[in-house]
Amino acid sequence: MDVDKNIVPGASAAEESKDDGESFTKVKSKKTQKRKRDEDGVNMDTDADGPAAVKRPQFPPISGDKLRGPDQMRKIPVPAHRYTPLKDNWMKIFTPIVENLQLQVRFNLKTRNVEIKTCKETQDIGSLTKAADFVKAFVLGFQVEDALALVRLDELFLESFDVTDVKPLKGDHLSRAIGRIAGKGGKTKFTIENVTKTRIVLADTKVHILGSFQNIKMARTAICNLILGSPPSKVYGNIRVVASRTAERF
Image: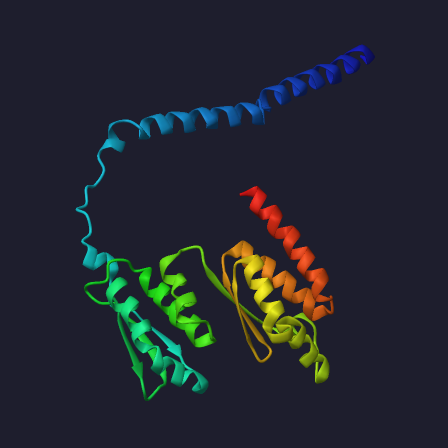
């Protein structure tokens, strides 16, 4: 009787383990699933490159009028102290904008703005930005001949900053900083212009620089050093070294 009792529990345990083994399902590894997904993706790509990809819709080319869209306008405000120079040089400003860039331009007496507008004859939409930069450069104080380079060349830019942005100066300290930038009779400003091949306008505490990106960077560094108190002789030497390096590089 004792032997039978020992045998029955062992047999039941064997049967339970067998049932548990049948109930477990084999789990697929993540690597095989990922490999299968990659293969399916490759098959889908090859199917997309087949005859279905060849059937693409054919659209007629868009005409130039629809591509250009409606006429655009730019307005450049003119301060009071630039009215007389604008009036004296109006024909020099008007001629390249109308004849070369094929744009319409006028000076609005009520709003005191120079308004530039595209028209049917305008070929390049980028000419509107060139004309706006040209007029803006003249309004800031550059000569018409220097500002006209913005129309002729694509690599020229305008940059403006305030002397107090470099160093918060007041009173006589601010006046001396502006004097260091200009130099005696404008000598320092002319030297920086000639070495860096840029044009610089000093208007009160504002500094405007016209030139290429690299040249503006050199001129800005020299002017910032002068504002911070470096003597002009040291600034001359630094910009000449930088200018010679850039000339050798190109």
